[in-house]
View (cartoon, rainbow, N blue to C red):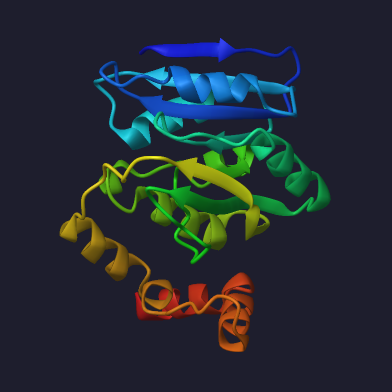
Length: 223
């Protein structure tokens, strides 16, 4: 397994894990991470053509030295304050176990509880406790399934912060996998079938229901 550590720290607050392939360059994203305003950072690049994206992410999580792990992709551009804002969110919220942020550029995301893998941070211990990323979903919905499992099984809460922003210059490389989509709907019917309306009264009420486990209880009843 090819695990690279282009940025090291004696006592990192956070480990950034970047899954990639030898045919893809990760130089630019690593350069951006060198220029972060928060410098207690470790960066791990899992550069292994034999591993799917879930296996690569899990290898990075296992190898991480920090209590917080954040994910991004090899074609993304983290703003200089990205790491600082992630660390601040976890320091301000001791029960926070999973944090999703916004995405701009070739892909846009504004927090619909889909847990986009190019801008996702979590408590390393809790991520390992729930089993990490599931290769059955590799390539499509693996990040969403992981986030929903963290909501359901981890000891703590999940949240979205718009100011934790990632720039995704290119169009996403992932393609819709109907089998994975059907598998996600079957495994999480309550979550899957709820439409979130951000910044509305209904959306905030539904988010409250979700945060306090109502839809997890619905899933357990239905399955």
